[in-house]
Image (cartoon, rainbow, N blue to C red):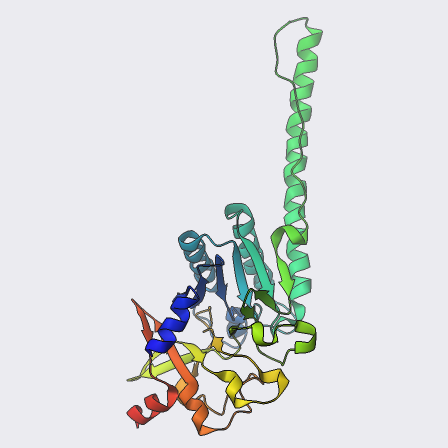
Amino acid sequence: MQEIANFYRNLNLHFDRNALIDSKNKTVAVSDLHIGLEEQFKRRGVLFPLHEKTVLINRIVYLLDKYNPKKFIMVGDILHHFNKIPYKTYDVMYEILKLIYENYKNTKLILIRGNHDIMIDYVLAECVNRFNDEINEKNAELRKKYDIELKKREITEKSEINENKEELIYVEFPKVDDSDLYEIYEYYKINNLLYYHGHKILNQENVHFKSEIDLMIMGHEHPVLELNNHRFSSYLHIADYYTFFNDKNYNMKNILILPSFSNIPSGVKINELFGNFLSPYLKDIKSESFKEKIYPIIKEKEIMYFPNLKEIEDYLQ
């Protein structure tokens, strides 16, 4: 356990509110927001409020205020629906874009595609259009005020009242482009860290990361640890990953799986997770010895590094 703690300490990485904090590179990463899941529950008859937008916005604000990152990374499954996106999904996505654009000018939003994000380009384009519609309304109001003031001055000049007046200047709010609000990628690399959702195998010949990657940060699995009938959102560290494969597509040194950033998706219990992984990086590993390389990490009042999965299972039996 101490070895795992030292690994993250040496990389200047730590954990907070289901996010990964990279102090060295000034980044905050979260995964699996699944925006729109509350609306899906409502359509299925779950009518009590889950406060999706409020919870997500509050958690993002907390992280941005506390860490003031240069980059805020969403590591896939930003949306929940594959098609027929409900209106409230646009509303939540727009509020997140607006929050960062207007209040955190020094932070760039980095989006990484997950398997659920089939419609994300369409949603983002609609959000950009909404931004510019609001800007057009502001500019129309500015123009109206300018014309009124201009008319007043014309009347004053005609009445031959000579007064020193400031120059009347009309400046419009500039329209925004998608690059002003976000950047979107299949994966994102910062020095020796690779951010990728993990839903399919990357073509490393195109990615050019190979042995340069000390840690791949992914989502997709929604891990939780259940102890004494209590569930805790959990990070999963997978150590010495490359030792299980000779295939060139599996030469990652270590993997970190982030918990779901949203409070709505049901977690997958780590105690039963082995053999039920979703990611192709993990699901083909059937060796019992692989359990000895999987280490849960929980952040409550403090960061807790747990023994490997094999030891946990032996203890709980």
